[in-house]
Image 1 (tube, rainbow, N blue to C red):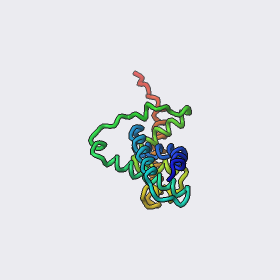
Image 2 (cartoon, rainbow, N blue to C red; image 1 turned 90 degrees about the vertical axis):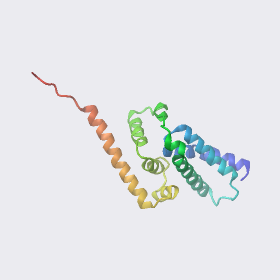
Image 3 (cartoon, rainbow, N blue to C red; image 1 turned 180 degrees about the vertical axis):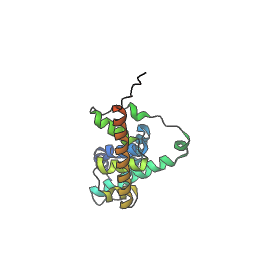
Image 4 (cartoon, helix red, strand yellow; image 1 turned 30 degrees about the vertical axis):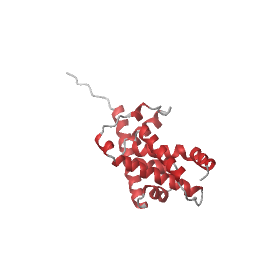
Length: 169
């Protein structure tokens, strides 16, 4: 891969790789590390890609693998994460911020499936290939994620609407 082709690929897919890693890891610093690792692997990649889609799929696959590798690491398993994502700029629309918070609270497999399907616009088959899972498994994860999101978002609304009854002596 030429330096110019690498630079173009990094500009085109760098943010996507970061967002995939962020949704898998739920940590901006770790996501940056994974994105750098993925781009380094792309730079060192010797074979030519068949097409743009092939390169994109390869980058997503490597991002998912590197994120999983980091999740399995000793450091990650023995340390307590700082919830830094809460400090990042929230979307201006309160409804979008509420949904983002609910999505980020999901388990990693559900969070990543939701991100790849809804935010990146991948089909179930493409998301399954990127996550190395069966398409039916990804469909199940999406179904469960939607159920959990629906439940958590409706519970939050019910809690905010709930008025404590007054006790009259």
